[in-house]
Length: 439
Image 1 (cartoon, rainbow, N blue to C red):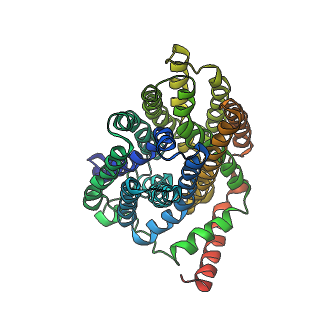
Image 2 (image 1 turned 45 degrees about the vertical axis):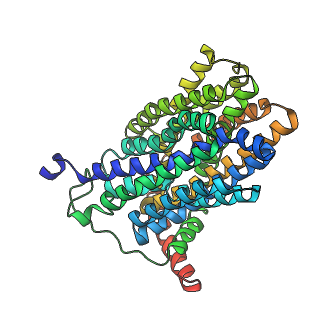
Image 3 (image 1 turned 135 degrees about the horizontal axis):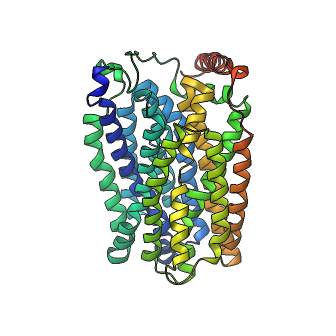
């Protein structure tokens, strides 16, 4: 107990993870302010540029469960270091591109793989290993770091694009990602047991379980077992809508949509940055609430409120930032990724030790939704001349996600064997996949 009251190394690990997430978030700020500059310089339709963003969002999600399994096998430090280098390469190489396929390769593939390796499954892995007490709160803080970092970078990126061109912005982002690498290599620790301490809030030092089978086999085995359960599909369905209504639609198309109504891109980028600032408050508060209240009810409330705000957004766009738009920014910012702490908690509740990997797959659904929305909204804009239909559809879907969340039952005595059965099924499928594959 004495050790728990002194400064616990879990907080240092959480601080380094926070900085890594913010460093990687720099690139994720660039697409929305680069859509029009790339369209102007190369003549590519917005749908083409949006497709590159969609590939990024898709790989960002699909990489997450494999990254969580790789962290179990090879360590958090190695995976995060490689991820930051990929982000730097993908962003830096864009300055040499001359064709749209190169944009897809750099923005889509390299940065998608890099940022996906430090997605929210990384947050779930860190909090699952290092925290027993305050898990929800720390999940909220780390999630806010990644999401708010992306949005807070926007004004800087917008000013760089305006004053020095989009290439300068891409190089600054590459440098920001590389700057975090030494910090990760020096301070990011793997397990509390490596330092001879219990996880924060735990009483005993628990040695890490040895990895079983290959990382890919484990990720696929967990998915095969989770896909047989109702809670997985309810969580994945709701989170797919979450991705469509945040990263895919608002994160990618808010600035171009505001620009369509005469607002300067730097002003619109500043509004998204404000969303990021209020997101910090909302997500940290959501983590605190998740430690205390029913996560299902929280999710239902978050999605319903988001749907209502998106339904009124088309009427708020104007050439300047009117007070009504500022109210939307505050309200929407508080809700931006408040869904993450309760979703992580529900994955852990239903799937136990495999909760981080299951959340990786749920997050993959999030990014599938985001990719669909990023391309779909670009097509809506190209065909209809504005984004109104996209906002209305997103609002209706969010209200549907609230219903999916409320369909989740609380885990009671009748479900007490679910986790054991799930772990047995996972082990069996992992061993089977390892035996038939490369392992």
